Amino acid sequence: MYTQNPPFPYKDILHLPHHVSHRRRSMSLSDRAAQFAPFAALTDYESAIQEAARITCDKLDLGEEHFAALNRKFQEILDNTDEEKVYTFTYYQPDARKKGGSYQQISDRVKRVDPVQRIIFLHSGKKIAMDELVDG
Image 1 (tube, rainbow, N blue to C red):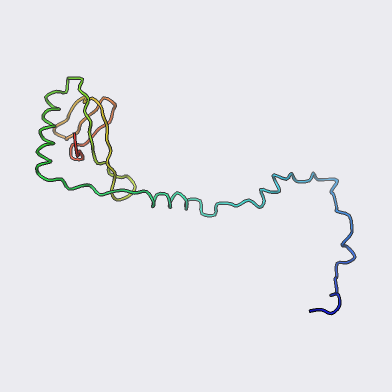
Image 2: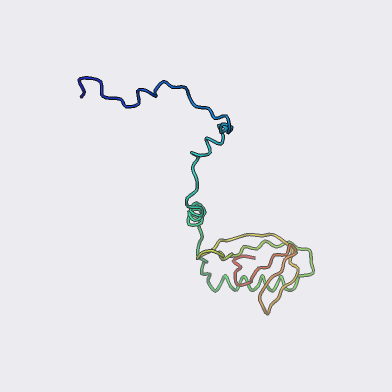
């Protein structure tokens, strides 16, 4: 602790008036605040965190009985493609970015079936691989 006042070297300029430039405009408060605003040093970090947090699941291993039921359903669809019947399909959609995927459900009319490539074409333009179907 000081027993007396410490030396203060700027005592002579402490009470001088604030300088205002006559050549340049003063900076607006929003521009002044922008100087101190945070910036994204890691630009893709937030999207990488969201991608890692996105949950995917593995494809279920279905038994032979389930495949037999699906084959019967395929045969029904092949026999009735010209009808206006709406089917509800549950299928596994593999994820394009990481391992796994998700189960999707769609209701639509069948436009046509390609039994060679094993693809079901729907009126909405969606294509479903028969190998990815869980329920039809």
